Length: 237
Length: 245
Image (tube, rainbow over all chains, first blue to last red; front, side, top):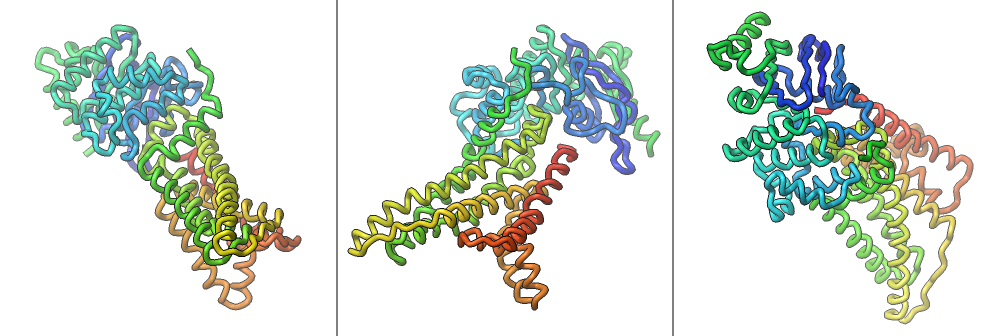
């Protein structure tokens, strides 16, 4: 389970996050939806202990990230698929992760296969990867330690339609086996087909949360999303 | 499931591996070895079979390239934004930084030992080829001082890289400091005093010569404080506090 409690983050005069609270239950996929710059990445980075909140807190399995002894076993994260050393091979990226987690090298092969990277692709330098391949690599890296929670920031970016279809199936399976999955996107249709629950944010504020059916209210999820984000923009204009 | 924190030796193995697992780092390591061997052989051919002189020539290569390697090691996570994954797997950033700093320091000692090992056959070969007796005399104190100097220059690279978090800036400062100090040293007696107390290269000369006095030690301590201890301390604080994005 992942929990955000009254999370706020200020950068000098900008409120990146303003009193955001929501929960990602175990065994579910929660879609974190909002326009670019809404605060999704900020919230995820605070959760992963990479950024400090101004107030409030974020916890994984009831504990702050910094309190996890070996976080790779508890929560898998993909915060930016492009943040890789271009001269390192995909296999090597996974090998370094496996070493840090104390996992056998066979886990690297398993993960490469799981995310659909061939042995040849794994040996290539990441600098030559397409964004879709980097996303697959990043998802594989997040899954190395078989974590009980998964945090993915815009994992569908750069994936082709087959890739998106594959990812949906993977996340569904993980959630069904008890994993708490949080994935962010700025594209509604990427989220609504896989998410059990949707959390909408705009301008750093929580706009709405619920199941896709609840949020759609008969007029469609897209209409709700557009109206809420437009209202958030107006209130700050 | 192993949920204890990552053992330090594991972090050390991972960070050592990162020194050699990219194209760039393989190239710089290869260049380092090739230039060191080249310097030893070249000096042997030109200056004659004197072990101490021949081995010491590699120090010029080490004094420039090992600090660069050190800088690339500690700045790599920021330049390639891999801090995002590294500090997510080990949120205790100080442990990661410690694991990054040790391998270049050990490599500096190993490099000096390697230069000695290469210099022995080179000296013997040059002596045989030129038909002159080889000079095997080595001053142990000077040899230790030379190794210590190499380690200190590498530590300076680590400290500057850690505080600046930017490889080009740290490399420029490291490499241009010799030029800057040689200018400062010519700016009257005040400039000369500043150079004696604050230039790490000048302060380590007695160490290499193996004739250190109490005053020399004080000057070395002050310049090491200015170029290693203080920037490293500031750099660790910056690393702990920095928001990773």
